Image (cartoon, rainbow, N blue to C red; front, side, top):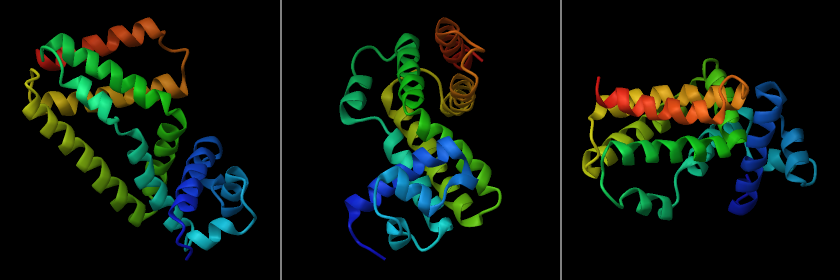
Length: 190
């Protein structure tokens, strides 16, 4: 296996794009090489097999979905009330939706994980860590609500993002905005 970390990351990022566009069946080493604009056979030098590629992609998507330090710093400013909570959820929905190929690739990975136990283990671990981190952040943030609020918003907003990316004409941007506000308000007042 080759050890150039920048090349490996570029190949994984290319794999995300292929997965989002072509689905799991289209994720081949050849397709990744073409997307990354590298010589044929390059991807096969970096990944033992397709299972290895799938699991590497599963980890990388979450790295790219994480907020940057500036976003985290902004989230801690101001009064931590329901209005602030809604602002944070709008930022989250917009940030995740902006990486549409990553989110669509993640949906493909979730489906593929039903057939690939190693991928299922990677996604289960990563998503559980993400949920726990969000609950932990919430507990120390001073925001209203509890861990159940966090989980309810996680579940609700994930499906809203799926609708936004896969069937974008179902809800207008204004409706999406209103639905995020309603989800926050209802999860806090349930």
